[in-house]
Image (tube, rainbow over all chains, first blue to last red; front, side):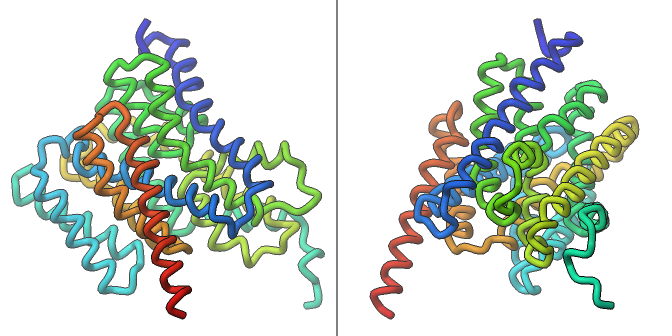
Length: 114
Length: 245
């Protein structure tokens, strides 16, 4: 059976998607009732959680799917660098960093003839 | 007007939470969902399954990993493991939010139910704004925002799916890129502890490094290894500052 077959696709999403994410949310509720907000343990958990998300972000930028798969790596990294520069120079507002990065990427893609 | 905070019903605060749909974080998230739609359309996943996935999984990085597992024909166990590893961060996120939301009377089943609506956007939004809400109305406020955001994005995904295939390549590429950039900017911006900044930078380097070394367990190793390194470095730096002071 593959994921395309009717009910199996929904079961697949429910088990590998819903259960795999909500387990952590439920554990979070249980831990949230116990973990003190100023504890060193929570500080470590926070660092591990952030590094996990950062690894996902890096993979999306370095190994994208779809249209961007054909785009050069220097364009993607360059767009992020330009966006990060604007973000830090202009008051650290997320909107500024996001708009600048996307504008740089769009200009690059257009220039390369996408 | 001398109507005190307790005079306002939970319904009013639920509606106030709903209005959060018209905020910048919600707007960016919806654009990211349009990008996610484009990804699933290119992957050939039918729209009903994408809507189902949006409601059931909700967290965007987990869905991106679920879709890539489905595309690569991964087994159920492998997909479950990959999605679980990417979602570990939900536990500390929820754990940090719960003490802000609950009162001594809030039933645990209600918190378990509401925890489903936690993902990066709702978490950032709630951590920022919940301080201005009276404590006994915070659950209603968060429920209003969280549930509305999920339902709105399920509708959005169902409608937009039929149009994304015709998007010009530049638009599809930019929408895909919106997701990682949005996460990057919002995590940096909303971080209240220095350890988050250090962990973010180390994780960005550790992710590709471990992908190159041990591709099967890259995310887990980058998270535990990079996070522990960030925690130790920040702790050392904090200790040194305390001694100097």
